[in-house]
Length: 140
Ligand code: DAT
Ligand code: MG
Image (cartoon, rainbow, N blue to C red; front, side, top):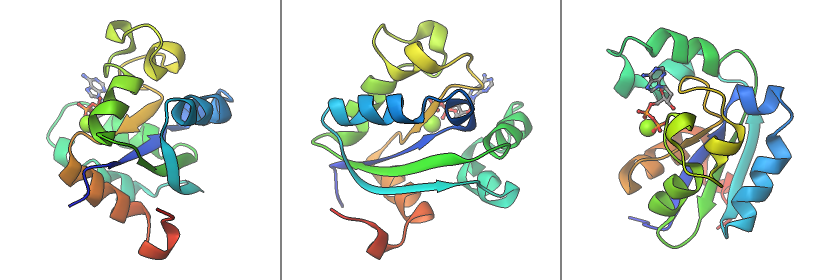
C-alpha cells in the first residue's frame, strides 16, 4: 500500500468564492505533486457514498446538500508522509481552531463549509482516490 498519497477535494464554497487557484497554489507550494485532477459536480448518491462513514451524524444531510450544491475539484496528491502532511496543511475541521497559515484558516468560513477535504489515513486515501479516479487518470 502506498503511504505517499492522499486525496483532496476543493469543496463548493472554495469554488464559489474564487479560491480554486489560490488553494491549488498553496498545495503545490507545500511540495505536493498533483497526480490526478478533476473538476466535477457530485451527485447526491456519490456524496452520500463518499461520506457514508458520517451517515449517522446529525450534520450528514447538510453535509451532502453542501457538497452537491456546485462543482468540486478532486485531486490525488503525492508527497512523503502525504496524509499527515496534508492534514497539517489544511488545519482543523473547524476553521476557528485551525492554525495560522493553514488552508482552512485562510479560506474556510465554518466547520460545515470548510473549504477542503483531506484523507484521514493511508487506507482511506487509496479508497477515496479510486472513488474518483481510474488508474489511467493518475500520473504518478
Ligand atoms: P475532516 O473533514 O476534518 O476530516 P470529519 O471527517 O470529522 O472532518 O467531517 C467531515 C466533514 O463533515 C467536515 O469536513 C465538515 C462536516 N462536519 C464535521 N463535523 C461537523 C459538525 N459538527 N457540524 C457541521 N459539519 C460538520
Ligand atoms: Mg474526515
